[in-house]
Length: 186
Image (tube, rainbow, N blue to C red):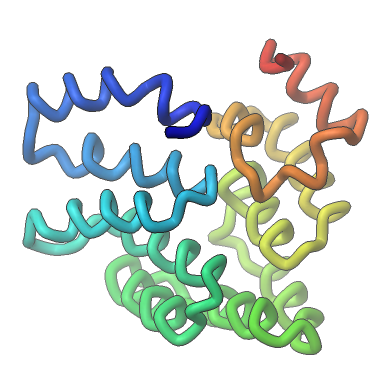
């Protein structure tokens, strides 16, 4: 069945879900781990399970679906989810839409990078600007931003250890140094 971190932690999530079967976060988190392990079908099932609860969608689920569809190459659906996320949060989707456009057509990358660099609402770190840069295959920029986030106490920094989007950085000594400081080296 796989060996990613979500496999080791499946039992706690099952137990948590039994304890609180309508918790949005408990339903969402396995999808997040599966997404960044590039198990898109399974991640989508968890995200859709969250949406099936009804009510106003959990914004993290919507942005998860946007990233999932971007990585799958379903750019129209990714754009739809980026707009939906913007409606829910009030965050301007221009940089997200530009990144999706650039993923579809790399000739548009410069515009996406400029918009991302100007975006104040995007934090530095593993789930922030570094992720956006990695999605655009700008790994040096991603690494520099991971370091900024790490230095400023990015609470999500440990996630870089399992996110396949950062795979091209694994052997970089700077990446390794951050993992070592977090005691996350194998």
